Image 1 (cartoon, rainbow, N blue to C red):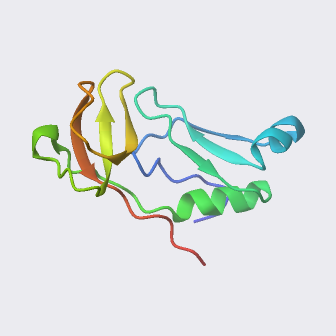
Image 2 (cartoon, one colour; image 1 turned 135 degrees about the vertical axis):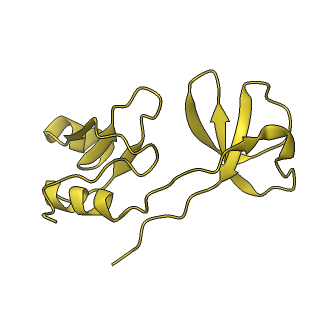
Length: 116
């Protein structure tokens, strides 16, 4: 597969993706970025290199198919988790302390990208 073709979002499988990296954005965010514009996802990939490097970094990310479980079953021992925020309709990351009613589900935190 050519590096110029973006693979679907590793978080939601969406294909509504965009690449940003004009000069002002590079100064503010530190390079080219791939964004998932699926409203319920808004996943973002970061890379400080050129456009092709940002695409290759995005495409190396492991696809994630979260195994969402009810938050009542979540460990409260400091384990990092992917938590579903029912208010913003997107995942957030952290440990569960049982103190946020808008968090309704959890899944294992996905692995990071493979480093070449």
